[in-house]
Length: 261
Ligand SMILES: NC(=O)c1ccc[n+]([C@@H]2O[C@H](COP(=O)([O-])OP(=O)(O)OC[C@H]3O[C@@H](n4cnc5c(N)ncnc54)[C@H](OP(=O)(O)O)[C@@H]3O)[C@@H](O)[C@H]2O)c1
Image (cartoon, rainbow, N blue to C red; front, side, top):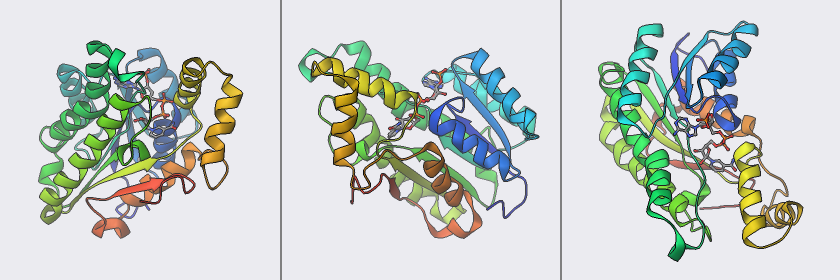
């Protein structure tokens, strides 16, 4: 996969769940990984763990929903490792509820964290991150199967992820002649700290136990279980490889058959 030798990968939300698995996978392949999260302590801890395994890793605290943080993050990554070859827009949050009762603040935070951040990060990486000057590049957006179908009590989340899929398709077509591919990976249910929080939210909304929600969700998945962060990272790794050069503007599911669209 690391066809071109060592490359520079910038992964947002690289301290937990899917983003952490993506960072570990790229680092194992010999890439230099630069991660962020809002929590400086978790960034330091995660970078420390990656380095302890002999990997090339660094990071910075940044909130990807804030334009000034995005600028600072991309500048820091370039200062550390040089121009960016691979951008993985992974940072995201869940969020929803009964739509008629959703507060403005929740709506804007979900949209800004999941969707606006993808635009801000991608623009910064293409320009100050140096990707636009290269003969190839990879932008991989972690969307969701909720970016292809509606999720009950998840209107802001579903809207944000449909937005990510639309952004991916438009930018993929725009950049196709440049050698930069833009794709979305759409996980279904993946066992991560976010997945646990989502189950807690539905248990409260339906006045039932988290175990009952887990059973209900698993019953919807043809494979019968949640996907793992490593299974999602595997597709991200493939999309970053040279062999994937003709795959662009796509939204590909990793979901145990949950969505077949
Ligand atoms: N798990 C699933 O079932 C599932 C399914 C479909 C799609 N996804 C998508 O996959 C992505 C990763 O989810 P996950 O399950 O791995 O979640 P997770 O375990 O909660 O990890 C989220 C990561 O993003 C960071 N983050 C959150 N908000 C941020 C912000 N504003 N700025 C910078 N970093 C931020 C978190 O760190 P801090 O909180 O410290 O900032 C953390 O490192 C998300 O986009 C999610 O929507 C997940």
